[in-house]
Image (cartoon, rainbow over all chains, first blue to last red; front, side):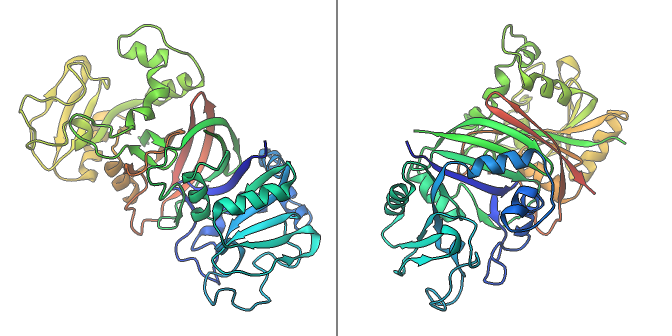
Length: 215
Length: 215
Protein backbone atom coordinates (compact mmCIF):
# COMPACT_ATOMS: atom_id res chain seq x y z
CA UNK A 1 0.00 0.00 0.00
CA UNK A 2 1.01 3.57 -0.56
CA UNK A 3 2.90 4.77 2.53
CA UNK A 4 3.09 8.20 4.12
CA UNK A 5 6.79 8.87 4.66
CA UNK A 6 8.58 11.71 6.37
CA UNK A 7 12.22 12.47 5.96
CA UNK A 8 13.53 15.45 7.89
CA UNK A 9 16.70 16.98 9.31
CA UNK A 10 16.56 17.46 13.06
CA UNK A 11 18.88 18.96 15.65
CA UNK A 12 20.16 16.82 18.47
CA UNK A 13 17.79 18.71 20.76
CA UNK A 14 14.80 17.82 18.59
CA UNK A 15 14.14 20.91 16.47
CA UNK A 16 13.50 21.00 12.73
CA UNK A 17 13.96 24.78 12.53
CA UNK A 18 15.65 27.35 14.75
CA UNK A 19 13.91 29.98 16.88
CA UNK A 20 12.36 33.15 15.42
CA UNK A 21 11.38 31.90 11.98
CA UNK A 22 10.43 34.76 9.68
CA UNK A 23 10.00 35.68 6.02
CA UNK A 24 13.64 36.67 5.91
CA UNK A 25 14.80 33.64 7.83
CA UNK A 26 12.42 30.74 7.16
CA UNK A 27 14.64 28.17 8.86
CA UNK A 28 14.98 30.27 12.02
CA UNK A 29 18.21 31.24 13.76
CA UNK A 30 20.87 28.63 13.12
CA UNK A 31 18.39 26.46 11.20
CA UNK A 32 20.46 26.43 8.01
CA UNK A 33 23.01 24.29 9.87
CA UNK A 34 20.46 21.46 9.78
CA UNK A 35 21.06 21.19 6.07
CA UNK A 36 24.85 21.52 5.89
CA UNK A 37 25.17 17.77 5.43
CA UNK A 38 22.87 17.70 2.39
CA UNK A 39 23.73 20.84 0.44
CA UNK A 40 27.33 19.73 0.10
CA UNK A 41 26.34 16.46 -1.57
CA UNK A 42 26.90 16.04 -5.28
CA UNK A 43 23.41 14.47 -5.47
CA UNK A 44 21.79 17.57 -3.99
CA UNK A 45 23.87 19.99 -6.06
CA UNK A 46 23.01 18.13 -9.25
CA UNK A 47 19.27 18.25 -8.46
CA UNK A 48 19.63 22.01 -8.06
CA UNK A 49 21.59 22.51 -11.27
CA UNK A 50 24.99 22.82 -9.59
CA UNK A 51 28.23 20.97 -10.24
CA UNK A 52 30.69 19.29 -7.91
CA UNK A 53 30.03 18.22 -4.32
CA UNK A 54 30.72 15.25 -2.14
CA UNK A 55 29.79 11.60 -2.44
CA UNK A 56 29.42 9.74 0.86
CA UNK A 57 27.00 7.50 2.77
CA UNK A 58 24.44 10.30 2.83
CA UNK A 59 24.16 10.20 -0.97
CA UNK A 60 22.63 6.75 -0.84
CA UNK A 61 20.15 7.87 1.82
CA UNK A 62 19.06 10.91 -0.19
CA UNK A 63 18.68 8.82 -3.31
CA UNK A 64 16.59 6.26 -1.46
CA UNK A 65 14.39 8.95 0.01
CA UNK A 66 13.48 10.17 -3.48
CA UNK A 67 12.47 6.74 -4.73
CA UNK A 68 8.85 5.77 -5.27
CA UNK A 69 7.33 9.12 -4.27
CA UNK A 70 4.23 10.14 -6.25
CA UNK A 71 3.00 13.18 -4.33
CA UNK A 72 3.81 15.42 -1.38
CA UNK A 73 2.12 17.12 1.55
CA UNK A 74 3.45 20.17 3.36
CA UNK A 75 2.36 22.69 5.95
CA UNK A 76 1.52 26.23 5.00
CA UNK A 77 4.73 27.73 6.37
CA UNK A 78 6.83 25.36 4.39
CA UNK A 79 5.21 26.52 1.19
CA UNK A 80 5.46 30.24 1.63
CA UNK A 81 6.04 33.27 3.83
CA UNK A 82 5.23 33.13 7.51
CA UNK A 83 4.16 36.79 7.76
CA UNK A 84 2.00 38.96 5.50
CA UNK A 85 -1.58 38.35 4.36
CA UNK A 86 -3.00 34.90 3.72
CA UNK A 87 -1.03 34.66 0.49
CA UNK A 88 0.75 38.00 0.54
CA UNK A 89 0.98 38.77 -3.14
CA UNK A 90 -1.40 36.43 -5.02
CA UNK A 91 1.43 35.73 -7.43
CA UNK A 92 3.60 34.29 -4.69
CA UNK A 93 4.40 30.69 -5.51
CA UNK A 94 6.40 29.76 -2.45
CA UNK A 95 10.03 29.53 -1.46
CA UNK A 96 10.85 27.07 -4.16
CA UNK A 97 11.46 29.09 -7.32
CA UNK A 98 9.94 28.54 -10.78
CA UNK A 99 11.00 24.91 -10.95
CA UNK A 100 10.51 23.45 -7.47
CA UNK A 101 12.52 20.33 -6.60
CA UNK A 102 9.44 18.11 -6.21
CA UNK A 103 8.30 17.29 -9.77
CA UNK A 104 4.98 15.88 -8.54
CA UNK A 105 1.76 17.25 -7.04
CA UNK A 106 2.21 18.84 -3.61
CA UNK A 107 -0.73 19.40 -1.29
CA UNK A 108 -0.37 22.43 0.98
CA UNK A 109 -2.28 22.50 4.29
CA UNK A 110 -3.89 25.92 4.75
CA UNK A 111 -6.99 27.74 5.98
CA UNK A 112 -7.03 29.97 2.90
CA UNK A 113 -8.50 28.59 -0.35
CA UNK A 114 -6.56 29.18 -3.52
CA UNK A 115 -6.58 27.71 -7.02
CA UNK A 116 -3.84 25.19 -7.83
CA UNK A 117 -0.60 26.62 -9.16
CA UNK A 118 1.23 24.70 -11.84
CA UNK A 119 4.98 25.21 -11.79
CA UNK A 120 7.70 24.17 -14.19
CA UNK A 121 9.09 20.66 -14.07
CA UNK A 122 5.94 18.80 -13.02
CA UNK A 123 5.26 20.34 -9.60
CA UNK A 124 1.69 21.54 -9.02
CA UNK A 125 0.77 23.08 -5.68
CA UNK A 126 -2.75 22.27 -4.48
CA UNK A 127 -4.19 24.08 -1.49
CA UNK A 128 -6.21 21.98 0.93
CA UNK A 129 -8.47 23.69 3.46
CA UNK A 130 -10.35 20.73 4.92
CA UNK A 131 -7.71 19.12 7.06
CA UNK A 132 -4.82 16.69 7.15
CA UNK A 133 -6.84 13.58 6.34
CA UNK A 134 -8.27 15.17 3.20
CA UNK A 135 -4.81 16.32 2.12
CA UNK A 136 -3.47 12.81 2.57
CA UNK A 137 -6.36 11.26 0.62
CA UNK A 138 -5.90 13.68 -2.25
CA UNK A 139 -2.17 13.08 -2.26
CA UNK A 140 -2.67 9.30 -2.26
CA UNK A 141 -5.04 9.59 -5.22
CA UNK A 142 -2.52 11.76 -7.06
CA UNK A 143 0.37 9.45 -6.22
CA UNK A 144 -1.09 6.60 -8.28
CA UNK A 145 0.05 3.82 -5.96
CA UNK A 146 3.39 5.35 -5.07
CA UNK A 147 4.20 6.73 -1.62
CA UNK A 148 3.40 10.21 -0.31
CA UNK A 149 6.18 12.36 1.17
CA UNK A 150 5.33 14.54 4.15
CA UNK A 151 7.72 17.46 3.87
CA UNK A 152 7.05 19.22 7.19
CA UNK A 153 7.18 21.47 9.05
CA UNK A 154 7.11 20.32 12.63
CA UNK A 155 3.45 21.16 13.19
CA UNK A 156 2.23 19.23 10.16
CA UNK A 157 4.32 16.16 10.98
CA UNK A 158 3.25 16.20 14.63
CA UNK A 159 -0.39 16.30 13.52
CA UNK A 160 0.02 13.35 11.17
CA UNK A 161 1.94 11.41 13.83
CA UNK A 162 -0.70 12.08 16.48
CA UNK A 163 -3.46 11.00 14.08
CA UNK A 164 -1.65 7.74 13.34
CA UNK A 165 -1.27 8.42 9.60
CA UNK A 166 2.52 8.38 9.34
CA UNK A 167 4.12 5.07 8.32
CA UNK A 168 7.84 5.74 7.94
CA UNK A 169 10.00 8.36 9.61
CA UNK A 170 13.60 9.07 8.69
CA UNK A 171 15.44 11.55 10.88
CA UNK A 172 18.72 13.08 9.79
CA UNK A 173 20.20 13.86 13.20
CA UNK A 174 22.62 16.77 13.07
CA UNK A 175 24.99 17.60 15.96
CA UNK A 176 23.68 21.10 16.59
CA UNK A 177 21.57 22.45 19.42
CA UNK A 178 18.87 24.92 18.36
CA UNK A 179 17.33 25.57 21.75
CA UNK A 180 13.95 27.13 21.31
CA UNK A 181 13.12 26.17 17.72
CA UNK A 182 10.29 24.28 16.06
CA UNK A 183 10.08 21.17 18.18
CA UNK A 184 9.43 17.79 16.69
CA UNK A 185 7.35 15.17 18.55
CA UNK A 186 5.48 17.95 20.32
CA UNK A 187 1.77 18.23 21.07
CA UNK A 188 1.15 14.56 20.41
CA UNK A 189 -1.40 14.61 23.23
CA UNK A 190 -2.43 11.15 24.31
CA UNK A 191 -1.49 9.57 21.01
CA UNK A 192 0.33 6.29 21.57
CA UNK A 193 2.95 6.37 18.85
CA UNK A 194 4.96 3.16 18.65
CA UNK A 195 8.18 3.22 16.68
CA UNK A 196 10.44 0.43 15.52
CA UNK A 197 14.03 1.13 14.57
CA UNK A 198 14.67 0.09 10.98
CA UNK A 199 18.28 1.17 10.61
CA UNK A 200 20.90 3.73 11.53
CA UNK A 201 23.52 4.99 9.10
CA UNK A 202 26.52 7.04 10.14
CA UNK A 203 27.70 9.67 7.66
CA UNK A 204 29.90 12.77 7.86
CA UNK A 205 28.25 15.30 10.18
CA UNK A 206 24.93 13.46 10.40
CA UNK A 207 23.34 10.17 11.40
CA UNK A 208 20.35 8.83 9.49
CA UNK A 209 17.84 7.10 11.76
CA UNK A 210 14.95 5.29 10.10
CA UNK A 211 11.85 4.15 11.96
CA UNK A 212 8.67 2.34 11.10
CA UNK A 213 5.53 3.52 12.85
CA UNK A 214 3.81 0.44 14.26
CA UNK A 215 0.06 0.56 13.75
CA UNK B 1 43.75 15.02 30.51
CA UNK B 2 40.98 13.48 32.55
CA UNK B 3 37.70 13.91 30.66
CA UNK B 4 34.19 14.42 31.92
CA UNK B 5 32.05 11.91 30.05
CA UNK B 6 28.33 11.35 29.98
CA UNK B 7 26.68 8.24 28.70
CA UNK B 8 22.90 8.18 28.87
CA UNK B 9 19.82 6.53 27.36
CA UNK B 10 17.46 9.01 25.76
CA UNK B 11 14.08 8.77 24.09
CA UNK B 12 13.69 9.85 20.48
CA UNK B 13 11.86 12.92 21.79
CA UNK B 14 14.79 13.86 24.01
CA UNK B 15 13.86 12.67 27.50
CA UNK B 16 16.07 10.72 29.90
CA UNK B 17 13.15 9.84 32.18
CA UNK B 18 9.38 9.71 31.74
CA UNK B 19 6.86 12.11 33.26
CA UNK B 20 5.82 11.99 36.93
CA UNK B 21 9.01 10.64 38.49
CA UNK B 22 8.45 9.57 42.10
CA UNK B 23 9.92 7.44 44.86
CA UNK B 24 7.88 4.50 43.58
CA UNK B 25 8.72 5.19 39.95
CA UNK B 26 12.14 6.86 39.75
CA UNK B 27 12.36 6.57 35.96
CA UNK B 28 8.92 8.12 35.45
CA UNK B 29 6.07 6.71 33.38
CA UNK B 30 7.44 4.57 30.57
CA UNK B 31 11.01 5.43 31.55
CA UNK B 32 12.03 1.82 32.10
CA UNK B 33 11.74 1.32 28.33
CA UNK B 34 14.83 3.51 27.95
CA UNK B 35 16.87 0.68 29.43
CA UNK B 36 15.36 -2.33 27.65
CA UNK B 37 18.33 -2.46 25.30
CA UNK B 38 20.87 -2.69 28.12
CA UNK B 39 19.24 -4.93 30.72
CA UNK B 40 19.00 -7.76 28.19
CA UNK B 41 22.74 -7.72 27.53
CA UNK B 42 24.88 -10.51 28.93
CA UNK B 43 27.43 -7.82 29.93
CA UNK B 44 24.86 -5.99 32.02
CA UNK B 45 23.43 -9.15 33.55
CA UNK B 46 26.88 -10.38 34.52
CA UNK B 47 27.70 -7.04 36.22
CA UNK B 48 24.52 -7.48 38.26
CA UNK B 49 25.20 -11.09 39.18
CA UNK B 50 22.81 -12.62 36.64
CA UNK B 51 23.41 -15.27 34.00
CA UNK B 52 22.50 -15.41 30.32
CA UNK B 53 21.59 -12.49 28.11
CA UNK B 54 22.41 -11.27 24.64
CA UNK B 55 25.66 -10.35 22.96
CA UNK B 56 25.38 -7.75 20.22
CA UNK B 57 26.89 -4.44 19.08
CA UNK B 58 25.65 -2.77 22.26
CA UNK B 59 27.91 -5.00 24.37
CA UNK B 60 31.00 -3.38 22.89
CA UNK B 61 29.58 0.08 23.58
CA UNK B 62 28.77 -0.73 27.20
CA UNK B 63 32.22 -2.23 27.72
CA UNK B 64 33.88 0.83 26.22
CA UNK B 65 31.83 3.14 28.39
CA UNK B 66 33.14 1.44 31.52
CA UNK B 67 36.79 1.78 30.53
CA UNK B 68 39.11 4.26 32.19
CA UNK B 69 36.57 5.70 34.65
CA UNK B 70 38.00 6.66 38.06
CA UNK B 71 35.10 8.50 39.67
CA UNK B 72 31.48 9.53 39.09
CA UNK B 73 29.21 12.52 39.56
CA UNK B 74 25.42 12.34 39.86
CA UNK B 75 22.49 14.56 40.67
CA UNK B 76 20.63 14.20 43.93
CA UNK B 77 17.60 12.47 42.42
CA UNK B 78 19.74 9.86 40.80
CA UNK B 79 21.21 8.90 44.14
CA UNK B 80 18.05 8.59 46.17
CA UNK B 81 14.36 9.26 46.68
CA UNK B 82 12.72 12.27 45.11
CA UNK B 83 10.21 12.81 47.93
CA UNK B 84 10.59 12.74 51.71
CA UNK B 85 12.97 14.75 53.88
CA UNK B 86 16.43 15.78 52.72
CA UNK B 87 17.68 12.26 53.17
CA UNK B 88 14.51 10.55 54.36
CA UNK B 89 15.89 7.95 56.71
CA UNK B 90 19.54 8.79 57.48
CA UNK B 91 20.35 5.16 56.76
CA UNK B 92 19.16 5.45 53.19
CA UNK B 93 22.05 4.73 50.85
CA UNK B 94 20.35 5.28 47.52
CA UNK B 95 18.65 3.21 44.88
CA UNK B 96 21.71 1.13 44.25
CA UNK B 97 21.69 -1.59 46.90
CA UNK B 98 24.54 -2.62 49.22
CA UNK B 99 27.01 -3.14 46.39
CA UNK B 100 26.38 -0.34 43.87
CA UNK B 101 27.54 -0.96 40.29
CA UNK B 102 30.10 1.85 40.33
CA UNK B 103 33.08 0.53 42.31
CA UNK B 104 34.65 4.00 42.55
CA UNK B 105 33.96 7.25 44.44
CA UNK B 106 30.70 8.93 43.38
CA UNK B 107 30.06 12.60 44.12
CA UNK B 108 26.39 13.45 44.66
CA UNK B 109 25.21 17.02 44.00
CA UNK B 110 22.97 18.16 46.85
CA UNK B 111 22.03 21.09 49.07
CA UNK B 112 22.05 18.89 52.16
CA UNK B 113 25.40 18.07 53.82
CA UNK B 114 26.01 14.49 54.82
CA UNK B 115 29.05 12.40 55.72
CA UNK B 116 30.43 10.09 53.04
CA UNK B 117 28.90 6.62 52.91
CA UNK B 118 31.16 3.72 52.08
CA UNK B 119 29.41 0.86 50.34
CA UNK B 120 30.53 -2.64 49.43
CA UNK B 121 32.60 -3.21 46.33
CA UNK B 122 34.57 0.04 46.31
CA UNK B 123 31.77 2.59 45.86
CA UNK B 124 31.83 5.53 48.27
CA UNK B 125 29.16 8.22 48.01
CA UNK B 126 30.39 11.74 48.77
CA UNK B 127 27.88 14.56 49.15
CA UNK B 128 28.85 17.88 47.60
CA UNK B 129 26.99 21.03 48.59
CA UNK B 130 29.10 23.72 46.95
CA UNK B 131 28.19 23.29 43.30
CA UNK B 132 28.94 21.42 40.12
CA UNK B 133 32.46 22.77 39.64
CA UNK B 134 33.49 21.66 43.13
CA UNK B 135 31.97 18.21 42.55
CA UNK B 136 33.90 17.87 39.31
CA UNK B 137 37.18 18.98 40.92
CA UNK B 138 36.75 16.51 43.77
CA UNK B 139 35.87 13.75 41.33
CA UNK B 140 38.91 14.55 39.18
CA UNK B 141 41.17 14.39 42.23
CA UNK B 142 39.64 11.07 43.23
CA UNK B 143 39.88 9.68 39.70
CA UNK B 144 43.69 9.77 39.75
CA UNK B 145 44.11 10.70 36.10
CA UNK B 146 41.25 8.58 34.80
CA UNK B 147 38.04 10.05 33.41
CA UNK B 148 34.98 11.10 35.40
CA UNK B 149 31.55 9.73 34.47
CA UNK B 150 28.57 12.06 34.77
CA UNK B 151 25.66 9.75 35.49
CA UNK B 152 22.76 12.22 35.22
CA UNK B 153 19.99 13.04 35.61
CA UNK B 154 18.92 15.56 33.00
CA UNK B 155 19.28 18.59 35.26
CA UNK B 156 22.84 17.76 36.30
CA UNK B 157 23.97 17.06 32.72
CA UNK B 158 22.32 20.21 31.41
CA UNK B 159 24.16 22.24 34.06
CA UNK B 160 27.54 20.72 33.17
CA UNK B 161 26.85 21.22 29.47
CA UNK B 162 25.84 24.84 29.92
CA UNK B 163 28.95 25.50 32.02
CA UNK B 164 31.17 24.01 29.32
CA UNK B 165 32.57 21.24 31.54
CA UNK B 166 31.39 18.21 29.57
CA UNK B 167 33.88 16.70 27.12
CA UNK B 168 32.25 13.58 25.70
CA UNK B 169 28.58 12.74 25.32
CA UNK B 170 27.26 9.35 24.30
CA UNK B 171 23.52 9.10 23.71
CA UNK B 172 21.80 5.75 23.49
CA UNK B 173 18.80 6.74 21.36
CA UNK B 174 15.81 4.51 21.99
CA UNK B 175 12.75 4.49 19.69
CA UNK B 176 10.23 5.51 22.33
CA UNK B 177 8.41 8.79 22.85
CA UNK B 178 8.08 9.86 26.50
CA UNK B 179 6.29 13.16 25.96
CA UNK B 180 6.58 15.26 29.04
CA UNK B 181 9.54 13.67 30.79
CA UNK B 182 12.90 14.94 32.01
CA UNK B 183 14.17 16.81 28.98
CA UNK B 184 17.78 16.71 27.95
CA UNK B 185 19.49 19.77 26.41
CA UNK B 186 17.09 22.02 28.28
CA UNK B 187 17.78 25.28 30.08
CA UNK B 188 21.14 25.72 28.42
CA UNK B 189 20.46 29.46 28.33
CA UNK B 190 22.86 31.33 26.10
CA UNK B 191 25.53 28.66 26.33
CA UNK B 192 27.04 28.00 22.91
CA UNK B 193 27.55 24.26 22.98
CA UNK B 194 29.36 22.96 19.91
CA UNK B 195 29.24 19.25 19.25
CA UNK B 196 31.16 17.10 16.83
CA UNK B 197 29.87 13.69 15.81
CA UNK B 198 32.41 11.00 16.68
CA UNK B 199 30.51 7.92 15.59
CA UNK B 200 27.12 6.24 15.32
CA UNK B 201 26.56 2.55 16.00
CA UNK B 202 23.35 0.73 15.13
CA UNK B 203 22.31 -2.04 17.50
CA UNK B 204 19.07 -3.93 18.20
CA UNK B 205 16.48 -1.45 19.48
CA UNK B 206 18.93 1.40 20.00
CA UNK B 207 21.44 3.61 18.22
CA UNK B 208 24.58 4.79 20.01
CA UNK B 209 25.55 8.34 19.06
CA UNK B 210 28.85 9.64 20.36
CA UNK B 211 29.82 13.32 20.34
CA UNK B 212 32.80 15.36 21.36
CA UNK B 213 32.06 18.73 22.92
CA UNK B 214 34.22 21.28 21.13
CA UNK B 215 35.77 23.77 23.52
